Image 1 (cartoon, helix red, strand yellow):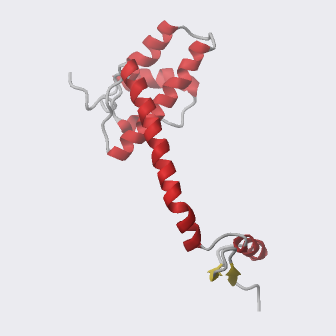
Image 2 (image 1 turned 60 degrees about the vertical axis):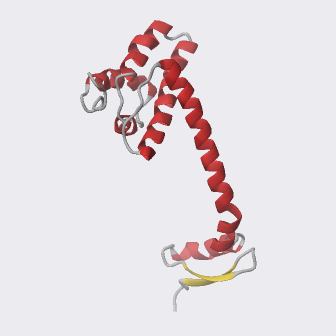
Image 3 (image 1 turned 135 degrees about the horizontal axis):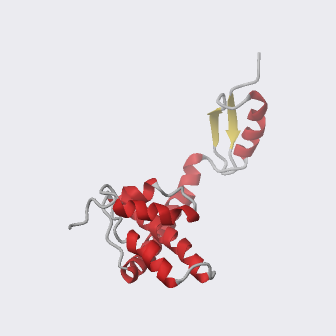
Length: 162
């Protein structure tokens, strides 16, 4: 016969649903079915959480963008090009990266002139969202070299007018 693949789950919300657990290893199905029984069904979960989750996510995103706008204006950073979604993401990456690099100044490892020349000056020349997104995985110590390279890259500066 074999271990069953389709399980009837009575969720904590009281709804009963059949779930195909064939994607899980046979020895994992019973434990997962038990875990599912302790949760709300999909529809109840969505009703309880979807609106709140989206509102909270949008509020957090707006707050981050407001903070980014203040930092960008104070630092003389260019507006980024790209889709709306890319721009939001890239702005967050850029502020996070520059903030991490400024920690070098705060820790006494570098000074303000290093930050201005090695970090801000090239960062002001990198105006494409795609460049920031493509490089987001690099470590803090790699960024001064990346910024220098990006500042010289026509691709990273494609929306700046000479």
